[in-house]
Image 1 (cartoon, rainbow, N blue to C red):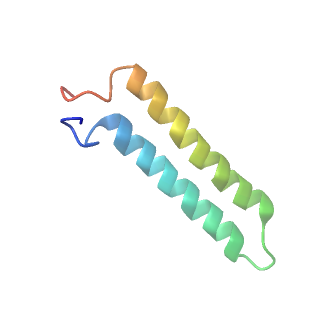
Image 2: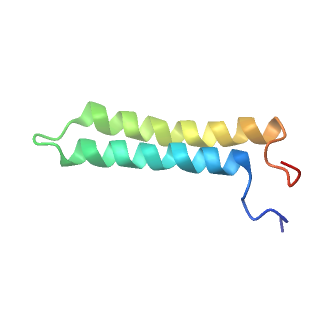
Length: 66
């Protein structure tokens, strides 16, 4: 198990972008009428969060020393 428990810049950045994606997607579903383009932008942001985490982890930002 990791010593950092996710407290790294890579993890925090991915969570922030993922949370933004969920908020945008949820807002798109709450609009009247439902705005599917806004919803899909939110879905894309959640996907970007995963890619962001992988890229930052490979750059070394998912290590305990940061």
